[in-house]
Each structure stands twice: as C-alpha cells, then as structure tokens.
Image (cartoon, rainbow, N blue to C red; front, side, top):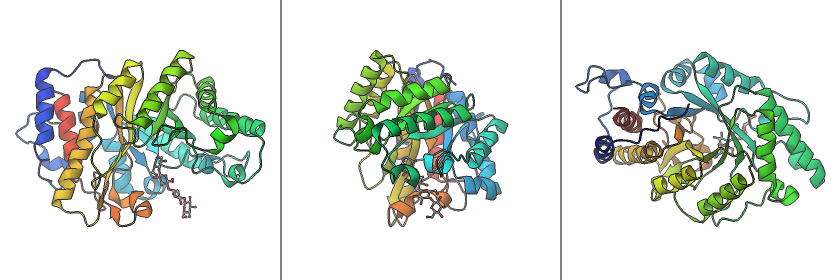
Length: 362
Ligand code: G3I
C-alpha cells in the first residue's frame, strides 16, 4: 500500500511534536476502554489508526503462538495490517534438509494474513544466521554455493509468488564500521552476492518489493553511509532494490539514535521506500513506570520518523507481546521490550503508538 503523498501539515506536525512531548496516556485496561473518550472518533486499534495515517502497522508472528494461543491470534488479526514470520521463512525452517522443503508454518501465516486482509513481509532470504547445517557444515565450492543460493531464492520466492508484499532479501550485510560483514556469502561469492540475490528474487516474483534490512541503521553513521553508497550503486546498475529496512531494536540503557528522519529521507531521495521492520525497546529488568514511559517514547520516536518521511510505508514491531519476545533469551536480565505485557495487556507504548498514528491521521 503506497502512502498518500500528503506531507503532514504544519498543524499535524506541531501536534505530532506535542504528542511526542506529552506523557503517554494512562493505561486503561484494554484499548476499548478509551472508546467514548472526549477525542472524537479516535481510532480504537493500531490498524485503524495506521490506515488513516497512510501506513501499515505490523508485527512479527510466532507460529507456535499463532496456532496455540487464541487471544494472541485475535490481537494479531485485530491490531495489525501487515505480518512478518519471526522464524518460519528462514532457510533452516523451510529447507531443513537439502531439497526437502517444509512450507507448513510459513503457509499458515500467509493464509492467516490473506483471511485477515493483511500483507506479508517475507523474512529473510540471505542471512548469516539460521542457515541449515547441511549448508554451513559442508565444503561446497564457491560455484556450488552460488547455485545453491540461486536455487534457494528462486524456490522460496517462487513458492510464495504473488503473496508477499516485501521481501527482506539480504539481512544484516554490513558491520558497524561500514565494512561488509564476513559471511559465507561474502567469502565465497564476493560483494556481488547482494546484487545477485536481488536479481534472483525479482526474477521469481517481479511484484514483490525487495528490501535491504539491518539493525543499528536508524541514524546517520558509518554503517548507514555504507548502505547509502551501496543503494546508489545498485540503483545505478538497475539492480531491483526497492526498500531500506530499519530493524529498530532499541534499548533504554543506550541513547536513542539521532537524525533518524534525516537518514530515512536520504534513502527516500534515492527513490527507495523505507520501513521500520523489527522495532522493540528492551530494558534492564525489573520494568517500572519510568522505564515503560521512556519505552513508549522510543517506539513513538521511530514512528514519528516514519510518518515524516514520504515513502516510509510500514512500521513493524518485533513481536507485540513480552510473552513471546526473543529478548530475554538473548540478553540476560533484559526484557519487557514490546507494546503488550505477558498478560497481553497493552502498555504505555501501545497507546503512544496509537496516539501518534491518530495525530497523523487527522
Ligand atoms: O526451532 C528450534 C527448536 O526445534 C528447538 O527446540 C529450540 C530450542 O533450542 O530452538 C528453536 O530454534 C530457535 C529459533 O529462534 C526458532 O524458535 C533458536 O534456538 C533461536 O535462537 C531463534 O531465535 C531467533 C533469532 O532471530 C535467531 O537469531 C528469534 O526467535 C528471532 O526473534 C530473531 O529474530 C532476528 C531477526 O530474524 C533478524 N533481526 C534480529 C532479530 C533478533 O535477533
């Protein structure tokens, strides 16, 4: 869905800024509690607010929760207009043994999305993590690896042809200093693997919008300067790269990134779409009222940048509830990173997102 190219008027911009400064509204028990509030026709879901603001709002989806947790499933369908499989489309999941595909979990999400009028962000085709052992533990020649990668992309994108809105084609290609990450792909195929991956994905599904995706790429820094130079070169070579994805994994113990809007605007100026693809704001536990308010501002800060950039088309959180968040399993002693708590109750971050969208939608 393309965003209306209506630049936010001065009033909306000012209101957006005020909304950003004001503390997130108190946390009624459920979103429905704010119905009948004094604010006329305030949209009562993220999805409704985002539609009026002209972007899609999304979440990563855990397959086990989608199939086994009915309240979770209801929120995914009610609050979001785009979904991303948290793990189900990764190489280790779809091709656990060479030439044997398992599309079941990914198809479940694609079918769910279709029945709920949602788009799907495909995640991810080329990465250095979650590759199957048969791929990483064998001694393939570079030529063999290139053909294996080509086959993988053609098979996976081809399987979902016509059903994927965005593909995260290449994930996390750069280091923080702007050098290319040392991966099985760079070592064996050279830097050209990136352009090849985009060409193969486009060949398999010419309608899908093809994204680069990374973390710590919100503001202007050596990493994003490297992405900017890469995108300029790829576009000059007519490589079909359509979008720049910002994962947006923030943490309260670190500063929020600066100049995010300026960074997105320079990719927008190259003709690219942009998207926030994996937003969460983790904290050192235990959570408290100050931390959850600061967290709300973190979510809203990135959302405001999306709303201020012409072709920022979507904002996706990396799981909407602390109940299934990846964070505690990776960052010891940290968590509470999402807009809903473990009991699937919305936190201040939920209302900060909805209020920020509601302002933009006026
Ligand atoms: O599937 C196995 C299961 O068979 C086994 O019983 C279980 C226990 O070991 O592990 C399961 O695999 C886990 C997998 O998620 C699927 O649940 C892996 O151990 C676990 O490491 C993996 O974590 C995922 C992580 O990527 C891997 O790097 C997270 O769920 C997922 O949220 C996270 O997502 C990434 C994005 O794809 C890219 N950007 C960063 C983001 C956070 O790391």
